Each structure stands twice: as structure tokens, then as C-alpha cells.
Image (cartoon, rainbow, N blue to C red; front, side, top):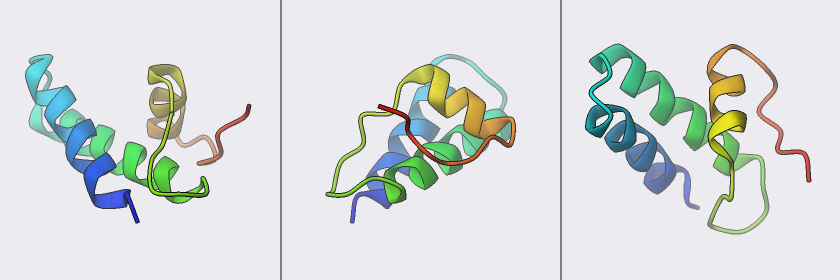
Length: 63
């Protein structure tokens, strides 16, 4: 639960920031993956955590 919403928010963020569609898509995928790594239906991933996931870092939020 929450992966689709997180994907959409990452995609929309990338598009609103004027990034290339591929970058926006990867941002959405990374944010969705991070949402699936936390309990519950929301993620509190930071921008830095999403960018790290986009670079291939593990999809784990460290708190």
C-alpha cells in the first residue's frame, strides 16, 4: 500500500522540476521502492534518500 502514490509523487516532482521524462520516471520508481521498504502506507523518504536509490543504493530508509 502506498507504492503507487509514492511513484506518482516522484514522477510529478521530476516533471514539475523540469527534468527529463526519463529522470522523472526513475525518481518515481525510486520513491515507490522506498515506500515499499517501510511499514504502513506512507513514506517519509527524504530527497537525498530518493536520489541515492536512483543511483542504485539499497531501497532502505535509515532512521
